[in-house]
Structure formats: structure tokens, C-alpha cells
Length: 71
Image (cartoon, rainbow, N blue to C red; front, side, top):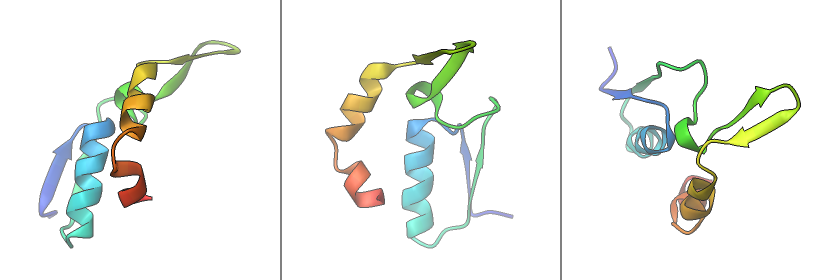
């Protein structure tokens, strides 16, 4: 049994899971959708057309220390 269950594999859930795992905890992430990423994911809604669900989220995430800290 994991130490921590993270519900949702969106940006916040994945970041939380990474930090918890770095601290040595056994983490299980569960996601309702078939893909991880949540609002920061890019989906092909129509063949040949990719859509950034929340394209502003990419810029906001990059303004934090998280990408450097988690690699």
C-alpha cells in the first residue's frame, strides 16, 4: 500500500507526487482521464489539429522554480 494517494494527474497532482517521492514516500497517482497532464496537456481534438487546453498554464509554470527543481 502506498504512503500517499494523489488523485488527479494534472499539473498540481504530478508536482505534488514528485516532491513527495523525492522525500522518500511511496506515491500512487490515479487519473480519471486516459492521459496525464490535465490543463497543461495538448490534445489532438480533430485529426491534424492540436489544442493546448490551457495554453497560458505553460507560461505560468515556466515562471516558477518547479521546472528547474524537478528537471
